[in-house]
Length: 268
Image (cartoon, rainbow, N blue to C red; front, side, top):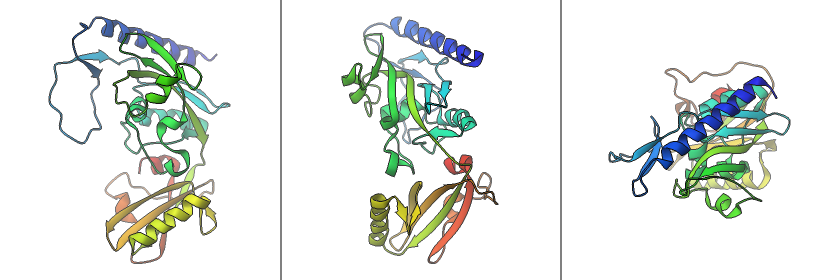
């Protein structure tokens, strides 16, 4: 086993032990929370005096198995860090929520969605197994064959059933670029009909669809953004500065096209 993997596994094991020690030191009647610096909740929250559990050792990718197309990932690992690691192998998670600071554990316990969801579902549907810190202060491995009730109930439980400290997820191969078609619609009915067709066939006008999302600006201006992976070299757009991606798709009628690297597409 490569030294880097051994080191990552050791660091993760130490992080789990710190988490357990902190949890077991909390009085039985005291509220708890995960101690983290960021949140992706788009609402205000009242300050709390609840004890924050140390998650400092649970933020990385533990290992990637390129042959099996799986990754073992700490629960507090952000998708930004996860994608940066898996892309080294030409792989990505089956669903990559668009905010870089969303954590894998958060997307599974709180759900998430993105432009591959029409074919890959939600993030929890590609989780093969998890290690969950339960309210009893123990870490249980759960999967479709072990502790199955917790495995099935954990998605969308928002921390009420425990915290994910490790997740093994499926990955899928990707090509270096994404070719985009922005299809203009003047009626929501027509847009929905086009979505139905793509869902039924996996294609648009005979071309396979890998990514599907859209934007509605008004009742008579909406767009489907249809993406197809490609290895063909060519110019790509850059929306990392003052250029704003969603504004780039607006046009009067028909279809416009664009190209992005796979990395820039995921974080568009």
